Structures are given as structure tokens and as C-alpha cells.
Length: 344
Image 1 (cartoon, helix red, strand yellow):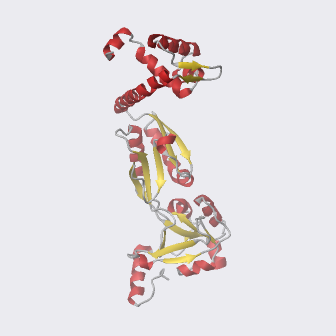
Image 2 (tube, rainbow, N blue to C red; image 1 turned 45 degrees about the horizontal axis):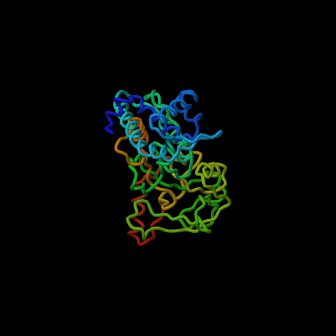
Image 3 (cartoon, helix red, strand yellow; image 1 turned 90 degrees about the vertical axis):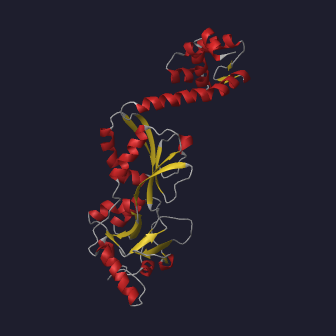
């Protein structure tokens, strides 16, 4: 039958179809009624009307739940995509009008979110009062599509090809320790010295942890040095490693966003500033979202805000020698045929 003729004879039919799809999703009249904001009696009556118009049973009722009949499931399967398309189109039209609004679900790593993202979110929410944020702090790599997240903040070198990725800033890894620890145990002057220190590390797959470093400004992987390290503490959270370093326990390898505040406050100092740790933590921070033809304005607004807020990365403490002096020292040692190390 022509869709227009169906609509002319039963103009209320499209609402009935929608209620049936919600009933299929919820699995009970009580749940479907709550989702639609109607009474359970109204939900039951609407389904009875639809069955009467269809001339066939669509729902199998039990005392605890409902199941669709084969005819009911076929009707839901054939109409679900249309209702999803209608809802998406409406959201796009609504989103195009006025300021960014609505609920935005974001997932981010625990340490990064606590130290760097949360301090910026109050400013974002003041700027966009119609946006609500639900922030999931987890180091687990969630599936954005299946778990319903609008955006993920990821510390990674390779965002997935199936997603849209916006680079927020670059990051780096740093070696840090307290002055008290270095007074007691001495300050490393070359990477090999780390083997004699209590190294607080992030546990990886290998039994014996190793740290790889390269001179600042290195142009070839052959300049890298890998050192087997050991220590009395391993933790899969950079905040925990930082806090242990603050107590004077040892030398910690951290992403700069975890070390930043303590370095700026002078509570920690850089160790081997002429060398850059590589391979332990990613060197880019991204905002990631599954590909879709339409990106909600709230997502775009948050990404833009974070890109501006984090544009300078996570600058650590002032190095009195400066990068230029580090590079100059490296050039002098190479000219003399000495293996490059940190300036002394």
C-alpha cells in the first residue's frame, strides 16, 4: 500500500511504530513507558491498537517481560533505521540553530584528566552554559561507538584510521627526582648511571624494565641508548610515580603533563636534561571521535577550546642551560669525538 494512503487512513500510525521500537529496546512495558514519559496503561493500549490495525499479534506478553513476535520483530527491523535517520536529521537541524547545547560524554585517562583537563572545563562550561559534560576517567581504551562516548582524549602516537582525530598538542617524557634523593644518591651524568639508581617505572610487558634515551636534537635512532633499570616501585599511573618521586624514593620517568606542576614549583628537578626519553609514553595528545557526517556543535566547541587552552603543551621547569646550550654542548663533544651526553 502506498505510504501516503496508509498515513491518510491511520495518521497516528507512525507514532505507534516508534513506540514499538522503544518497546523492543527496553524489553518491558514499564521500561518503555518510562523512556517515553507515558503511563504503562497508555503503552499497553497503544500496542493493542497497533496489533488491531495490523491484524496480527506483534507482542508476546508475560508477567515479567515482553517479546516481539516474528511479525513484530520484522516491523521493528524494517522501521528502526528510518526512525534513527529522522532523529539524526532533527538533531542536526536543532544543533545548527543557536549556541552549542546538550549532553557531551567524554572519556579521558585518569592522570591527564585530573591534572590538565578538569582545570580547563569550568571555563568551557561558563562559556557554553547550555552544554552538560559527563566525564569518564579511565585508563581503559573504551570503544566510543559501542559505549556511547562523543569524544575521547587520547595520549597516542597513532590515532585509529577509522576515527577523526584532532591534535591538541605535543608532549614529551621527562626524568625527574627530588633534590633530597639526588643529594643522597648523586646525580646521573650519563644514561648508564641510571642502572645504579632506584628507578620508579611504569610496568610494561618485559620482565626487566628498560629506558631508552636519545640526546636532545638527535637526528638518528643510532644515537639512542637503552639502559636496564630497576626500582622498588612500579605503578601503572603517572600520578603515583610522581608522588613517590616527591617523597624522595627515586628517579621517575613521567609524561610532562604529570611532572609539570611539581617542576614549576621546584619540588622536582629534571634528571639528564640533555637527554630525551623515547618509547615509554606517546608524544601527541589527540581528541578522537568515530567518523560521522555530522559533528555536533558541542563537540566542535570543546575541541576548539582545548586546542587553544593546551596550545603550548605542558612546559616544564626552566632549564638554566637552555636548549641552545644543550645543543651546543652536544656539537662540541661530537667534534672532539666524544659520545654525546648532557652538558656538565
